[in-house]
Image: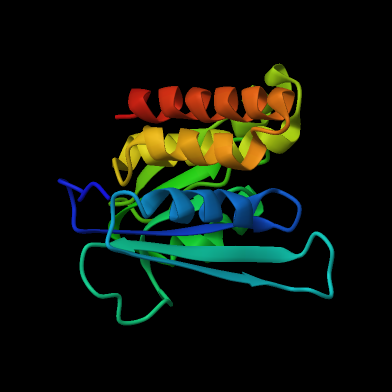
Length: 188
């Protein structure tokens, strides 16, 4: 394990609707992070009775002990369903990062002036690549690049481990993640 040189802790809430890949994006981050962090927690939360219902997961990466796997407010929120903007803006710590899907955002705006907003055209990019289901990886890439919470290499390795038996799916997912990295790197 390579010990992380940057921040000793990163926290994110991934949120959206069931079927958007919310839980997978958080799980990919968590499983990839074990190469750089001593302690990693992934906590999913979803409504099992409702297909397409709200779901979220919390990811905490830390060099120190993690006292609780739950977060009421996080350093970052990755929001795949813009209709939930008002709910999740309040779950950000002061000066936190809100990564939000552009499709469906409309005229919704963040009300807290100190929040750093990164609007990502995840669905648009994924559709251009051939599968809208890859939008979650575009947003994950944008989060990784914008925060530096984890280097991209371990996530690419985890993608290969999970999807290596399906070369077309792996190629799509890698490209979606890389396009997200580009969006995140270009953010102010």
